[in-house]
Every structure is written in C-alpha cells, then in structure tokens.
Amino acid sequence: MHDKIWYLENLNLFKTLPKPALQEVAQKTIMCHFFKDEFIYFSDDPSDTLYFLKEGKVKIANYSEEGREVIKTILQPGEVFGEFSLLDEERRADFAQALDQVKVCKMSKPNFQALMEKHGQFSIRVNKLIGLRLKKLERRLESLFFKDARSRVVEFIIDMAEEQGEKVGLETMIKNSLTHQDIANLTATSRQTVTSVLNDLRSRNLINFNRKQILVRDLKTLRHAEVPA
Image (tube, rainbow, N blue to C red; front, side, top):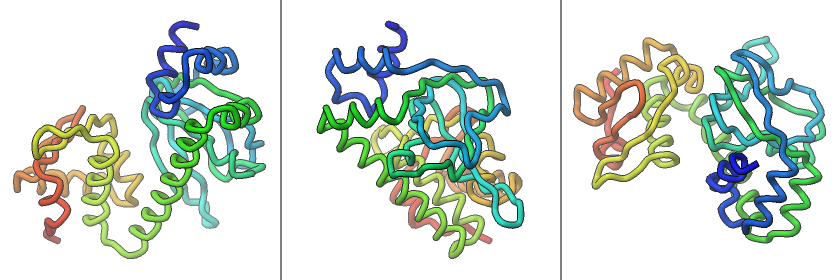
C-alpha cells in the first residue's frame, strides 16, 4: 500500500490531491503485471478502466482499413492511458500492448469519475490531459499528411523536449528510453531515416544523444534548422 501511495503521489495528475484522497485512490486501484507483447486491452473491449503506468513501456495503436498497424503513442512510466473512456467511449478504439515487462495500476471508470466530482482541481487536470492528448493526435495526423519524413523526426524531438525535457541553461535534456525503431514507428518513417537524421543533427551540434538521453543544444535553433534532404 505505501509503495502504491508513493507512486501515485509522484504522478503529475495526482499532485493536487490531499493525502486522504491518495489513500482512497490506492485502495481503489489494482496493481497488474504484463509480459512483453501481452495486450493490456484490445480494440472493441469495453472502455471502463483507466491505467497508470508504473514500469515499462506501453504501445497505443490500432489498425487501418488496409490492416496496417498505426501506432499513436508509446507511453513511458508516469503516464496515464485509457482516459478516453471519460469521453463516453463505450468500446476501445485502440489497443494497448506491453513493449517490455510492464506494471500498471488500474482504476474503474466510476471510481475515477467520483474522484473528479469530489476534487475540482483534479478534474481540471484530467480535462487538460485529455485536451492535450487530442491536440497532440491532431498535430501528428497533420504532420503525417503535410511533412516529409525528416521533418517529422525533427518535430518529434522538439515535442519530446517541450513535453518531457529538463532545462539546463539553453540546453534541454530529454530522458529517453525509446529506440530508433520506436521513433520510426511513431513518425511513420524507417529506422534508417531516424538514425540518419539524428546523426546529421549531432554532426551539426544541434543535439547529442546516447541510449538513455537526448540533449538539445538550443531548442529555438533546432526549431528553425533545415535538415538537408
């Protein structure tokens, strides 16, 4: 129980909740484990549960009419998913799949809604989260239609820096556990393209990177940088 409370109070979503409310949340959540490639839920499953990712990575995706997998996002520890159940989604439009060993806390939709009704600031945070997710999906679709592969990779790095980065002077440090293939899947490009773009940006001293992090030298400069074809 104490481990679960510590985890929940370190999620941005729950930071406005008082300790008694966190204890109530901990009592009404269930900890679950999933193996690599195991599905957490399928498309068309009842949309009646929200999940808080504690360990591992989770892929949210669906299939196009042609049967091609379309990856919408790859979630990392600390993120919430299944939140579209709050928008009166009766059946899942997407599926959620573990990309490695995954540990999540899950909470029923009625319990989550009761929490929102009881705590106004928490409700505002949830609505903001859903709005940002929808806006991000809309931007990603626009990017797929109107931008070339290299521009999509650069934009993805900028988005990560703005959403997850830690400022260190002019530089921005992104803790990153995504592989080049993960980034390729999310930007509808190839692993070779991702590697090529990242290496080019590093050679121009716009970024530096290793397996665990990406350092953006100057976000403003990167945003206006042209990537050679």
